Image 1 (cartoon, helix red, strand yellow):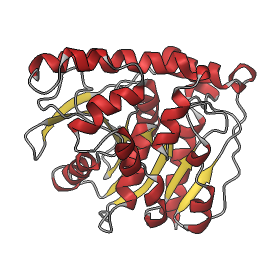
Image 2 (cartoon, helix red, strand yellow; image 1 turned 30 degrees about the horizontal axis):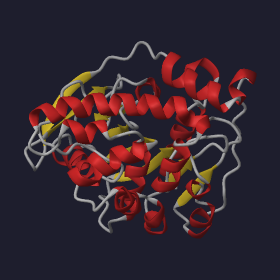
Image 3 (cartoon, helix red, strand yellow; image 1 turned 180 degrees about the vertical axis):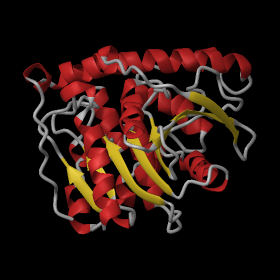
Length: 322
């Protein structure tokens, strides 16, 4: 499918990728959205917490929102989408990955960029228990990679899944991991590492026979974290094996669900491989927008509705008309 021409023109200060990323991550607020929590039990005995918000009219449509690394269901980049869709007659559910809802999950493993088995259970729950007939998926960063992998790694995506939107996607995880080690991303890197290690220390208290304090102390970078915890906890040989197998890039050619990718050219988290131009041109179901501005999930626009949020709704409307 041809590469789409973006129309995003941010206010002047937010043409700077750093400013737009920091403002969106730390300062943005989304008000007047009411969420209700539902806990679902997973097949392996663990649980996921889902944060629901509803349209004012009865609907068979729902948008499912997947957050980024160390995010949760109250982050503005997911509640902003939920509110926009609620206001337009679509229910919304923000999925908290394992351990991200304010309560640690039960098992030693938690979540990672390629953990699509949990996504599969959420989709099944929406179809079999909630009886939605039109399901839209929208993911941010890590959650976006997960969505694209989910759609491309299987030939049996449920018919109820009508469209997907992936924003600020690290399509090639190793490339993105190396970008985060660069000096320009030190503030982001250290903030992610701080939260990950804090949560890992809490988990270590329950799983001392698996993980030692010395191993945690050896973590100096996010790649070290994936080497010490992510890979071992989730069945990968090492961090590189995890990046290789969990990256969505290798699955994009197989996506049959209409899917929109929005990656800003000034997103400092993304390597060159994270802009899948070739894959989009060769797959009629894959649409790629590469705005000049936007940073990492920083597509600031008018009236606190972000460009990527508005484009998500527009894209879904276009898909439904076909």
